[in-house]
Length: 150
Image (cartoon, rainbow, N blue to C red; front, side, top):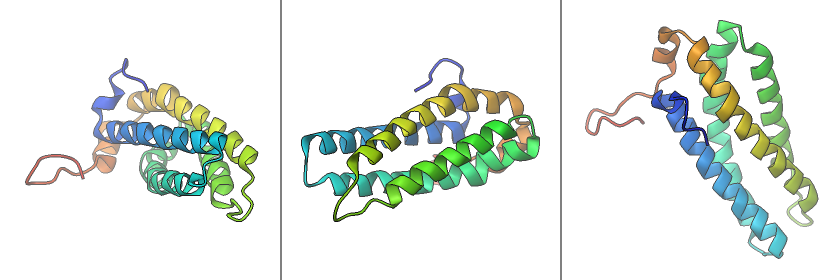
């Protein structure tokens, strides 16, 4: 994950990047389970999907919506949303009785490239493109007791 440009200092980007790490770890566990013929591969798939679904929602309804409204990165956002649909479609359509693991592995490869594109392309560009009021709208609120983001 990116650590050089400072974009993780923006709370939403920091949250999404941390989620990318968790998603990458879960994808790695799934890949390992598939290669080993582990009967728990479906459980690993479920864990990955459980991480991906809320993450994608936050990206698309928050950061991507603001980037669409700003206008300079609409092509990149459209491509990333199409990738979300593709990856979710593959992972969500696995036949649990006869999983097509090669198709899942190909989707995991696309997921890896997708995360890399967001981390090293879109996130740094978003920091430059979006005005402060946009960041104010999409920044996770701090909880009063701890001061940490929700």
